[in-house]
Structure formats: C-alpha cells, structure tokens
Amino acid sequence: MSRAALDALSPDAKAEHDRARRVWHANIGPLRTPQMAALHDDLWDIVETNQQDGDKAKGAAAIDGYPGLGKTTATLVFAREFHRRQITEEGRSTPGGHEHLPVCWIGLGANTTIKGLNQTILDFARTTGHIGSLMTLISRGAGRAIRHGQERLTRDLLDRVKADEGAEQSRAPLQAALDAGRLTPHHRALRTTASADA
Image (spheres, rainbow, N blue to C red):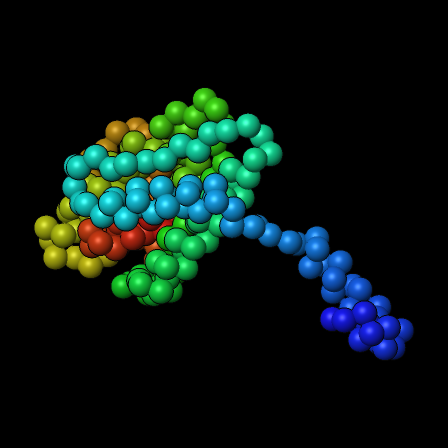
C-alpha cells in the first residue's frame, strides 16, 4: 500500500490495517533459506527411498545443530509438506474409513531409547500398555483373524491369543482401540493405522 493510500484511510480502516500488519509481522516466515532448501532435499531423498516393505533397512535422518538455528522450524515445514502430499496421494481416510494421519510430532530427549520412542508414539495414539507385549498381541491377533477369515480384531478373538503378562495388562486399552474401530486385521490397514497413529 502506498503512503498516499495509507494516509487516505479512515481512522477505523487504518486501525484495522495496522492490526493486520502487526499480526502478519508476528507470524512472518518461515523463510525458505538455502540451508532449509538443502535440508528438505536431503529429507525428501530419505523419505522417497523408504518405500520398501518387509525387513529391509530404511534410512533415517538426525538433524543436529546449535540452538536457535531453525532445526525445529525446518522440520515442521517439511512435515507439513509431507503430510499434505500424503493426504493428496492417499486421501483423508484409510481404506477402512478412519482418519489418515501420515505425520505426528513427538518430542525426543537427548537420551531417548527405542522403547522410549515407541512409548511416546503409543502415548500419541492414546494407547497405553507394554510396547512389545501389546504389539505381539496385536500381531498374533491379526494373524489369527486372517487365518480364520475374520475382518475385525474382536475381544473374543484376542481372548484366545496366548500372550505374556505385559500383553494381558494391555488388553483393556487395546479393546478400547478396537471398540473405537481403530484396528483391523488387514496388513495394509494395520500399517496405515500404525503410521497414522505414529
């Protein structure tokens, strides 16, 4: 807006313009710097080559640097772009009709273990219980459902699965997830649900 146009505004219009400008300035960015562009290229290289199934190792990224350089901001911008791309490609819902959440944000401390990471992911998904035991119960239940031609993981089916004490303690939260319709026995649906909840 030119200075003459700004001077021609009524007091109410100028106040609204100034408020809008303050909001815009308070929320400026992020700016796509050459460093952010290079980081995003590296992240896309890793993500786009992680399409394999099975037991093949997948690449990962660790972003390290001094505080205040924009590591979190750059990562969040990338995550938003990836999320939007996945929603465009896969849709807003899974094949089972559940919300598709391709990205979740979880904070990790400097000494995070694999168990701690898994627990954080489960906390995000509002699932509690013993991680390995819960996954074993789900995996065995899904396998049994598929072998018996069932389309859902049910309480009756899971009650017949033999598991350890940790899985036994995980049955109540798992049943809540099943009752909410968040888990099915299909391999793709389970993988999609795990990705969505992750």
